[in-house]
Amino acid sequence: MLSALERIDLPLSLGSMGLPLFCLLGVAVIAALARKELRDDLRQRRSLLDAAAGLLDDARVTVGSDGYPRLAGTYGGDSRISLEVVPDSLVPRRLPQLWLRLTLLAPEAAPRPSIGVLARPIGTEFYSRVLGLPESIAPSFTTDFPLLMRGRGVTEAAIERTSGLFRTLFADPALKEIVITPRGAGSVRRIAEGDRGAHVLYRQMRFPVSQVSPEFVRNALAELRLLNDALEPEPAS
Image (cartoon, rainbow, N blue to C red):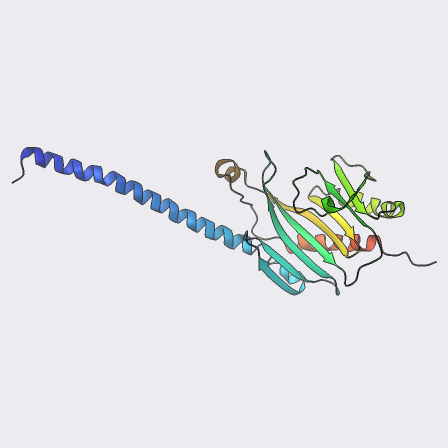
């Protein structure tokens, strides 16, 4: 038979065991929710370019090691098009950015220089093609924000022929970079800015977008065409 002291200690002992079990259960629930949230986030990332894939012929979507998609195909002829979703959180005290990096590759190289402009340069733009060009050029037009203009084999005539188009395109604040090369043209556009709460509280990159809209991509592809045609040889008179 249990003594009075033992009868008093028994429920206290069970109660003390219940607290750790409750804590373990809470941790398990939080971990399960975190795993579900991660799966949902990865699923959303992978599908960002699914709607835009219908714009390209022979479209093929692949997924990078970071879970973000790349789309390749042809558009309006035999030029190859590639689109890459690029997350960027390298700039301190700025919300993460989600970029769309577009490339148009012509079937053959053209006899022309490379020239490009990067808006609001910081030096951490790992996705930039302009930063890889060797020659610094004084910007041929002005904006309300800093510009970095670089090229390879650039002539005064090439600068004059591209200045008006560059100025027009950079009126859109979502445009980060444009470049023309002998093989084609490229651009970088902002898709979305990261969620402030997720970034500040959890240091996570979450973007309030489930799809890159076909209209967004269609307009960006039209800009690539304009860039690629900007330095086409002028017809003989």
